Length: 223
Image 1 (tube, rainbow, N blue to C red):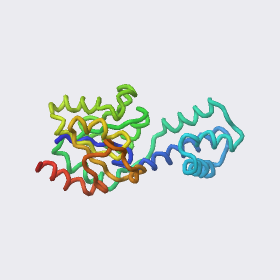
Image 2: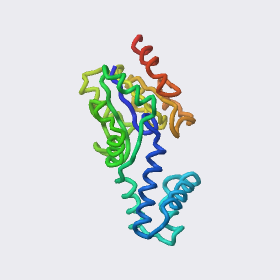
Image 3: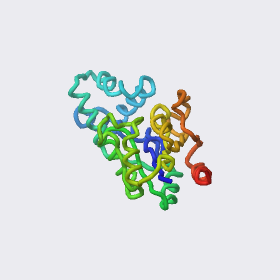
Image 4: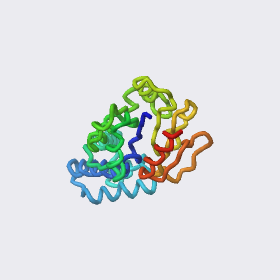
């Protein structure tokens, strides 16, 4: 079996990165304008809950009488380029080293600098044979494209049935792999845990958390 893991909300809580990024933007506001960092963070988190991530920086700037594409771009840069402090889910921290007998890979979508900073912060690169950040290969090769998985399959000279992908987002993580015969595993953690998958988009297997993966892997190996 070739074990491939997703990153965000599969191995760690992505909301921690989002909050860390907002803190970086709040520091930018303090440095540029003298705005209180804690107040800024609270405003951004409130907007996130109320309106979603896309409106956060515009609303925060507008609340202080500021606006403009250049300022928003500066906020985005501060968010994307900051060095976060992150930790794995406890089970992920124990599970990954226990799987060292298997070929392990990471496949994650997202801005290539952002995702690379996450991998660095978590210190997980040495656990994997290779970490694939899909956007390094062009956005067209982001999930649900199987492009990076095909690179793994060729590298390992494996059959699709030997590829196991463990991820959390049923909108894109499994639909490209299921028709190829790969084993797909949805872990019900993070912000997508209550999402009902569209027909054809659900994983072949579902587990409540990574604590259940070892027993599922044993079942898959028994065939």
